[in-house]
Structure formats: C-alpha cells, structure tokens
Image (cartoon, rainbow, N blue to C red; front, side, top):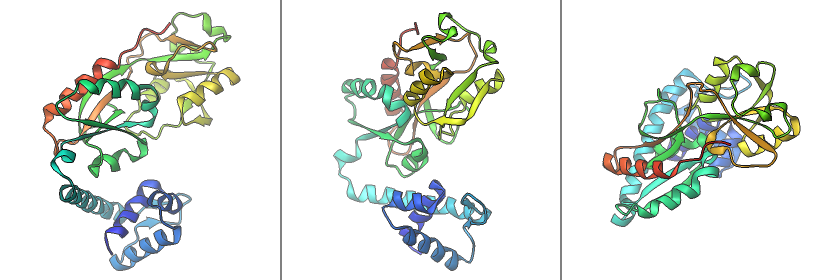
Amino acid sequence: MNLKDLEYFAAVAEKGSFSKAAEYCNASQPTISNSINRIEKELGALLFNRSTRTLALTEKGEEILAYAQSILVSMTMIRTVANSNEAISRCIHLGITTSLSHYLYTRVVNSLDSLTELPVKVHEIKKENFKTQIDSGKMHCILSACDDAYSHYDKYLVAEFPYVLAVSSDDMLAKNEEINLDELKDRVILGIQDSNCLDTSQNRILLKHELNFKKDIVFYTTEVLKMALVQKKEVALIPQYAAREEAEIKYIPLKDTGIRKKLYLIYRGDKFEKHVFSRLAMQISKVITFQKVK
C-alpha cells in the first residue's frame, strides 16, 4: 500500500463509484479497482459494501478513510512547504463554488484589487470537492453557502440573502408585488439538485410551509431552472443574488420566512493569521450587495 493507493481510496469514497474516481484521478477503472483490492487484502478488511446498488463505505472503511485523509493532507502540506518559495507561500488561494461564481465571480475578483496586504488568487471549485480542496490545503479559504450549525471550520459571515419567488411573466402570480408562501400550496416548486450538504436553507423553507416540491425533475444550475420555469409554467425559489432583470421572468419578494441563504468565507486557520481572513471577508462583503427585487 502506498500514497497513490490512499489517493484512489479517498477518491472512490468521495465520488461514490470506481468510474467517477478513475476519471477524477486520470486513471483507468481497473487501476482503481486493483488498488482498492490491494488495500483490502493487505489490511484484511473490506472498505466498501459492494452488495448495495450504490457503492458505500463499510464501518471499518469509514474509520480507515479518516486516517487516510489525514495522511494525504499531511503529505500535501509537506510538498507545499518543500516546493514553495516565500512569494508563493504568501499568496491566498480563494475558492468560489460553481453555483456562486456565475453571479459573484466578477464582483469578488474586482474587489480584491484594493486588498494589498497579500495577493489573492481566485479559483472556481465544485461544491462536492469542497472538503478535499480545503483539507488538502489547495484552497486556504472558500466562499460558499453554509448553515450556522456547520462548525468543522472557522468562518466569517459575508452576506445573507432572502429567497424570492421566480415565475413566468405571464403567470397569474406575476401581478403580485409580494407573496406569502402559504399561498402556494397548490403550486409545484421546481428545485435545484444541490450537492452542497452544508446549506439546507431551501429545504427548510419547503418543509416549514409544506410546499409541493417536484422530486422527479431536478436541475443542476439556477439558469437552466429558469429556462424550464418559462416553458413549464411552474414556480421556483431562488436566492436574491440570482434574480437578474429578465423579460420572461418576474421575481416576487416573499413575506419574511425567517430563513435566508447565508454566504460564509470558510477558512483554515493554520496558514495565515485570523485577521487576514477577517479583512478578506469584509472586503468581499462590501461588494456583494444587490438592489431590492422589482
């Protein structure tokens, strides 16, 4: 068993399949499978339960994964220290999850010109790679939606946005200047297939108001959802930052649900001092502001 075996093991656990792990690691599927078999043989323990429809870690596999990830993180940090010079090591790598970057990337990047204390490089990352990116040290901090209760990392609240109701401009609801979600009991709510397990704000709104969420059709981006919204004459809840002025869609403010989508700068405190991330969070917060939905 070597480091590459551990990398393949962690990839399979994260991706949930051998084929996806092979694509992620730029390796063949037989290579990944042989690596997992070799680890299991050497340790004398099954890492994955292969009898279910989806590939899942065994209890022993979950225990071993925690140690494997710790080893991989340590090796990444060792390589970073060994291969970096002072200029590189004093650069902040900021990740923005894909769903946010579509709306916020330009604003964030432009705001960093005045942050002269340290250079900042901005990267778009997938939400499902969040933990790997920040645990490995590849990202020093990440801008992402997150619930208050998530406490695995240090974080600063950057902004919070209410949800708005998005409807086709010719929908009977489009004439409303404001709407109470309890009035939507007879409507079908389209939703996003969100892989960000850190943020449950939309689900909490749906449950709180007992709304009819369309489970058989899901979308991976808000922009595609908007297209379906116009064609299918259904409605959707989207965060205010995604509510751009569009002829075919009307965005209606909601009477306060008490639940908002909160954006945090989540960071690892072992690379830079806390005040560096505090200043960065304040700088980003200044530019992530939007006008009231019309």
